[in-house]
Amino acid sequence: MPRTPRTQPPPPPLETDPVRVAVIGTAIWAVTAAALTIWCRDWLTDHDRTWWLGVAYSGVAIGIVGILFCRRRAKRTHR
Image (cartoon, rainbow, N blue to C red; front, side, top):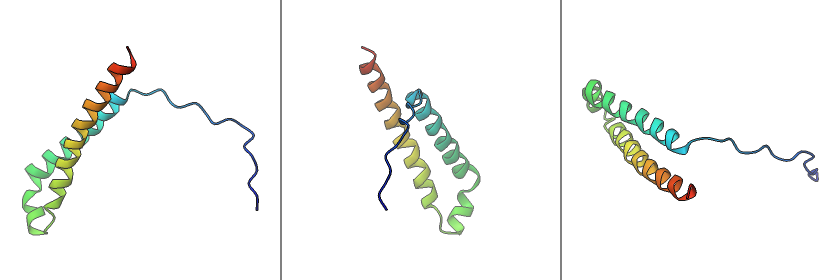
């Protein structure tokens, strides 16, 4: 069956602050990593789930890189 062409243009992209989004996401990963480290470390070790800590720490690290990238990009686009 052939596709019919779109009759409406696509909606415009949302105006967001990517730095704020990256900071909030990184904060969520940091809280998760802290909670797993403080309260769940023994349970994670007993159930062979210590890789969860690595995932949380990786989320924080990638989030920091994302924050730096977004800040640099924002500075370059506002020139």
